Image (tube, rainbow, N blue to C red; front, side, top):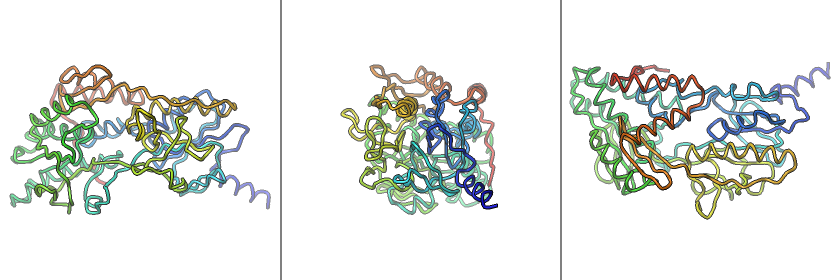
Length: 432
């Protein structure tokens, strides 16, 4: 009887994952870095355990299209149980890691503890509100499928409510949208909402003067897309102005109470404010505070190993790997995370065989952003271009980068339908 109880307890503590002769690699986070890491361990002789608080990978670059009815949620999500189905020792567990006990080689989650031989932290980034509590309470972030659907619900519900009010000031609040942050996410979101207002709203809400609704894009810096070229910044601003977006540069948002956005220039009435103003690393406790940068990222060496730890690595947005070219760490881009995931697979295999680790070298393949139909900007090494050609490149790159054939097919069909019909079929209010 005692032996049976002991076996049950051991099984509970390991979540049914048997300890074998293989080295156990625990990956925390199924984002771009984590997903490409496990996909490149397909033929490895390592036990792979992936832990994430969601059971799907999210293609974040297209979340704004979910938020603006361009795509359904399942087009940008991919089940995390699927990548290593053929691997003889792959396990996924849906849990949230709370603490890393590096001295014991153990992680503690909300569902129990698990030991590891190697640990990779690939937990990505979370929304940074810069300590402004009112914005954190009332603004809408966009880092997950759930949050994108909430934005879609809010915009559509506000227009439904605007039809039912007789107060012009209340109607203005309901139909205005404020987007905080002039980076790629903010610019793409503003352009998509502006096209939605131009092509969809007049048909769906014929009894409402949709031209009176206002879309504001607020940026603290002197230019949009500050991380891209001056040509891309200027062209994206022109495209947004052509779509009727009100751009407020060098403007600081002070507070938001759910109805009024207070800035250092003017107050804007709006019951929808979407925050894309910044991110910081999201990771569990247990890492030495001295290794955390001001931007909330974990300091790692060029091999991806967290400084001061022999068995812990950091990848993607959460990692700060400083080089001469990138003294503040690599940019928090999907392309960096993808490359690091593929690179780390090789290093993990080398470590398991007792071989020295290789340093990571980022290959900059360029950056891009789309503002709307036939409107995009692309910065490639040695080449910069905008307009319809850039838009086609953006479409091709994002379609190819989606995980899973079904997601690519569904997305292509949605884009083709939207382009031909000037329509978006997923404008549904689906509440919790």
